[in-house]
Image 1 (tube, rainbow, N blue to C red):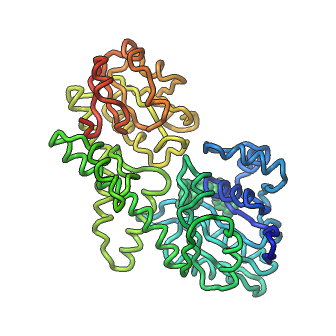
Image 2: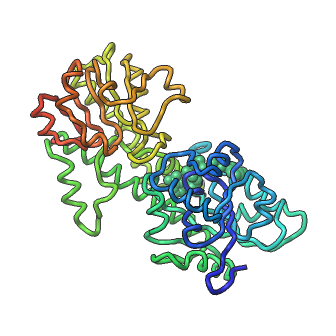
Image 3: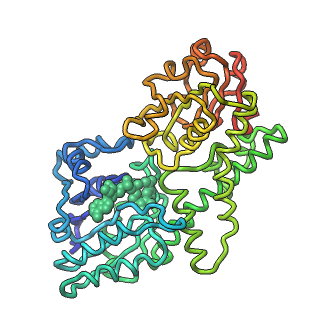
Length: 439
Ligand code: NAD
């Protein structure tokens, strides 16, 4: 299956979203032949013509390169794709399901198809984030659907990339985790990853599955930790950014995921923390720290809302407010669980007229477009508003000319949910500035 001397491995990647497309392209970069499979015809058509159906810096250039070099192709034909490839990466979504657990419907469908169409030995790799015990389930789903028994191995190989820097993260990971009990599968995985310069953690599938949840939950914990601390700093008149810097320089702590803001969002942290809590519950083990992480995160946008209400005199009814940024963080178009949308919901609940802007997200197809007006430029968005709320840390927003924007506004209020502006600078222009313990 895997030949010595650097020959090509035929890889199938099922699910062409953020993770699937990135995974496909980095394996192309390493000289492998990749097929990307998705059930969504529009995505496959877009990718086939060299267009990304989502926003991710740097990825489209690589897509064009590997389409031109014929290293990658895309299809909706599940049967042929499974038959023709030997290593199958499952990269489908695992959204939040009942009571916070991960919904494995898409993974199950894929595993059943693999069983049904399997024609020879395959390595089936779960790259989707899946709860402890899923490798075993995938194995059973495959076996149940095989018309005749054919051997295969299941490997857990979680993905740690971040949206916004997906390509870099996938090409230069801090570590690669390979969870399998099969020597044959381990050898094939090692061969696939042999050109990556990072430590490889070899373990069993359950530990590998746990590593992914433990990592994301730890990062979520860092964010909730600094956010809750920021509330105390606010009371004490301390600049939390200085505290972040002062503790983040300690190598044992590290500076990342330690910036106070409106709470974590996105398609991973909220669902992964909840899924781990659900696993804990099912196994009769309390994870009290993570319970608090979720509570702090849920109340952080509301804490910020209270500050907005207080500063603007209590009642927001009839006010017009500009929201800058819709995605859950900069450099992505992902709005899943975005704190920005929570703020907008609260503003609408307070009878505020909301004007919104984002460099890449368009509300066109969202129900929000009926109640929120979106504008092309920041200047249009802030015109006639009582306040601006900075919700996403887009680079564009850090370099705005506030001196030019101020005369367009009805009242000069800036609420900085990401602590990204220089307080003194905007105050010297006559703005009232309120951040998250940004004193
Ligand atoms: P996504 O929603 O962007 O993409 C999933 C894709 O799978 C969709 O295009 C969907 O059409 C396709 N799909 C669903 N069922 C299918 C089937 N039966 N056959 C073929 N295609 C099918 O999801 P994503 O953000 O790429 O995440 C995928 C997984 O990776 C999730 O488990 C997620 O938790 C995990 N993950 C995500 C990130 C991230 O930053 N997005 C990072 C690490 C891990």
